[in-house]
Image (cartoon, rainbow, N blue to C red; front, side, top):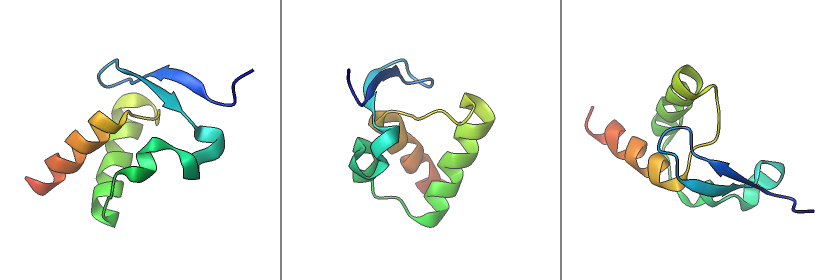
Length: 69
C-alpha cells in the first residue's frame, strides 16, 4: 500500500503525487514562495478548491499571478 496518493489537481486536472502525510517531502516544497505569495495561494485554494492541494504547475502559475499585482 502506497504512503502517497495520486491526485488530480482541482485547478487544472493534472495528476500529481500528494504527499500530505509527508509534507516536507512534497514536491510543492520546491516552489519558493514569499509569505505574501503563500497567503494568496492559500486564499485561492480555500475559496475555489476547498483547500485541496494543487500541482506544482498551478502553484507556479499562481505565484506568477502575485507578481502581476
